[in-house]
Length: 77
Image (cartoon, rainbow, N blue to C red; front, top):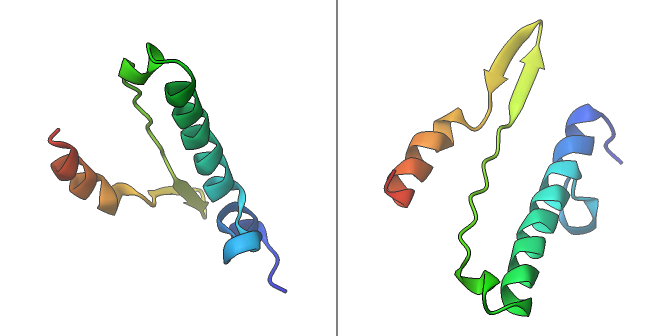
């Protein structure tokens, strides 16, 4: 069994998911359930932003920065 801060945050496979994938699933699930439950809310647009940083030796590294450009291109931003 692997333990540590990174594993706690990211997790492993399936039932060993970490905090980050679990929270992301909960947020998206909440949005989906609101849209399904109320026809007026189905027209509501949601914007979800995620920052994922690593702090190592007092330096901050934006983990998702390499994906940011790609996602902006796909979103048409």
